[in-house]
Amino acid sequence: MSVGGEQLSRAIGTELEGLREAGTYKHANVLRSPQGPVVEMEGRGEVLVLSSNNYLGLAARPEVVEAGIEGLRRYGAGTASVRFICGTFEPHLELERELADFSGTEASLTYVSCWNANEAAIPSLTDETTVILSDALNHASIIDAIRLSRPARKVIYRHSSMDELREGLESCDAGQRKLVITDGVFSMEGDLAKLPDIIELARAHEAVVLVDDSHGTGVMGDTGRGVAEHFGLLGEVDVITGTLGKALGGAAGGYVAASEEVCDALFQRSRPHLFSNALPATVACSALEAVRVLRREPQLVERLHTITARFREQLREIGYAPLDGEGAIIPIIVGETAFAIEMSQRLLDEGVFVTGFGFPVVPEGTARIRVQMSAALEDEHLDRALEAFERVGKQLGVV
Ligand code: PLP
Image (cartoon, rainbow, N blue to C red):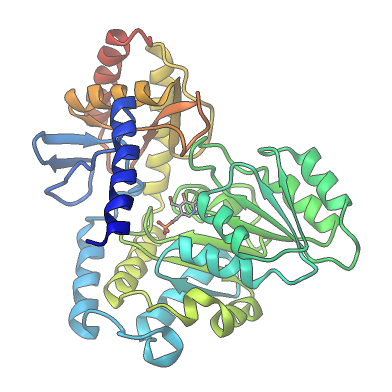
C-alpha cells in the first residue's frame, strides 16, 4: 500500500473506532434463508423479521422465484450492455408496460434501482429555469439527485408544510419550470405526503409533481397502487418513481412512470440509463410476476393494512408511543442512537429482528426503532413479537 493509502486507512480506522466507542457501529446480520416472516440468522437461529421492506411477502413467493429462474434460463445472467446499445430484453418492455398501467401513467422506464431512477429523473427534468421544491424529509436519493441537478433555485420546505410549499411556489416567476418533489410514504416517519394539497397547489401554479412512492407501492390504496390510489388521485401525478426492491419482489430495480414524452426523454438522455447496464432479466421477470401476483391477490394489501393497524394499536396498549401513520412503517422514537441500537439488540436476543436507526439517517435525538409490517406475518408471529416488545420495553424502562 502507498504511504497515502496507509494514512487514509489509519484516519478512517480512527473514525470507525469512534463509532464503536459511541455504540453506533452497524453490524451486518447474515441470513441463511430467503427473506420472509421468519429467517435463519447466522449465530441466532430462527428470528422473526419486522424490519424488511418485503411488505407483501413476495420476495420468496414460489411464482416470483420461478419467474426469475425462467428469466435467467431464457436470457442468461444479464444484458452485458446498457439499454440503448444492445441491452433491452423483451421482459424489460413487458415490465415497463405493466408498471405504467399499474401506476396509472402512459409509460415507464426501468433502472437498476430507485436510487438510479431518482438520479435519472430529477436532473433530466431540471432545466436552467427550474425551481425545485422538495420536502425536507425526502429520501437521501432525492437529496443527492437534486445536488446533481442544476436548478435556478431550490426551495426545501419544512416537512409537509403546505404553507411553505405555497410560499415557495408563489416566489417563482411565471416562465419558470417548477418541480415539486415528495416521498409518497416518508421512510423514517411512516407518514404520507399531503398529496391532495400538493396536487391542488401544483395545479394552481402550473407545477410538475414528482412522487417517490417506494414505500407506497404495493402498500397504499385498496389494490396497492400507491399513495395516488389511496387519495383517489390515480393518473393525477405527473412523475412517479418507485422501487422493485421492496413490495414488488424485493430483488432490486427501480422505475420512473410518467408520460410517453418524459420516459422517452429519459431513455434518450438520463445518465444512469446511458452509462449503466440494464436491469438483469431475472429481476425483470421476478418483478413482472410480483406485479401480477399483486393484481390477482389484492387481499395481500388488505391483510397488510389490517395487521399494521392492529400492531400499532397493540404497541400502544403495552405502553409504547408509535408515531401515527397509514403506511406499513411504524416508527417508535426512543431518543439517542446508541439506545436505539441497544434496544434492537435486545429485541434480537428475544428473536425479533427490528432495526434501530439513528444519526445520520435521522436527526440527532430522534433515533428510533422502525417496525415494518409484512402481509406474510401470521397472527402467531405478531403475538410473539409483541411479547418480546413488552419484555424489552420493561427491561429498558421504555414502557
Ligand atoms: N426512495 C425511497 C423513498 C426509499 O425509501 C428508497 C430505499 O430505501 C429508495 C428510494 C431507494 O430504492 P432502491 O433500493 O431501489 O435504490
